[in-house]
Image 1 (cartoon, rainbow, N blue to C red):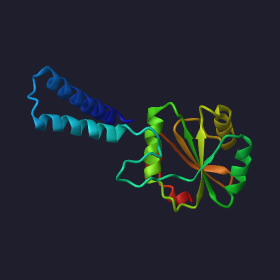
Image 2: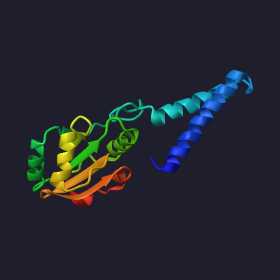
Image 3: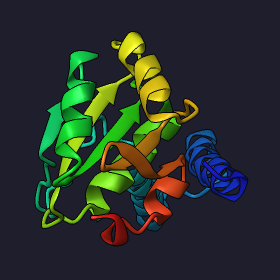
Image 4: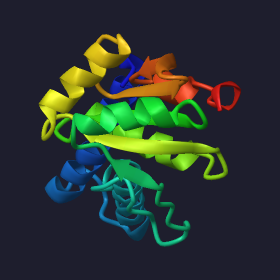
Length: 174
């Protein structure tokens, strides 16, 4: 998360808590408008940061689930390299304990074009650390998390990590 986003999040959260404290202590008139303001802030905060998984959607938006292929075996890497000769192969390396990784993944899922002609692999690097290490060795890319690799003709033709993942235009590589 860029520093400016972190500061914005802190400011927003502080405003919600401050208004709530002032309401409870009587320093702010407990009129209907003030209660509505607090509810709106909490609702906005929950909408922005309260999702617990990448496939969970709010009530008013359509669920979008990507065609992930689980990458959980070193043996799959040779098959990925071979398949990349005819079709782009994408590997998304994700740390399930990292909030930044979750945020980037949520943004990636939202922006991903389901019409892309590519196979999309999901690697939980905490559960499959040895697979993650082998990805780095085989495709000669330094480990980062989150990280997206684009593989064509057996080699990585593009890769990005953190916020760069969602800035990456996949179309030229597909």
